[in-house]
Image (cartoon, rainbow, N blue to C red; front, top):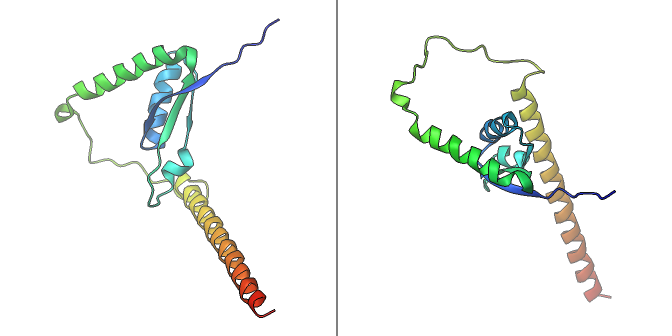
Length: 139
């Protein structure tokens, strides 16, 4: 019995999780397994923009690329001037502790706390090393 190793390759990268989700759904609809990576860095609004990467099995790459090209072509050909947009009705905003918006804010706050803790720990280490160096001069 021989084991096969599936190699994963990057198909493309997009700006956010929503774009990635649309591509993933289209690929999975055609029977191609795909994953996305980089969601947390892309959604974290910092000075450095992040990307979400769509990954597929190497064996599925050519087919996935054709599906992606077809999606891109269809999007470019769509005439948005004729799109019917109902501006009178709005979806009710999700609220409360169960809403995705609340959980994203909590996650961003926790990430910020982690970065602050990391910065304080680093500054403390540097300060400690500097004080020890100065004390060594007087010993």
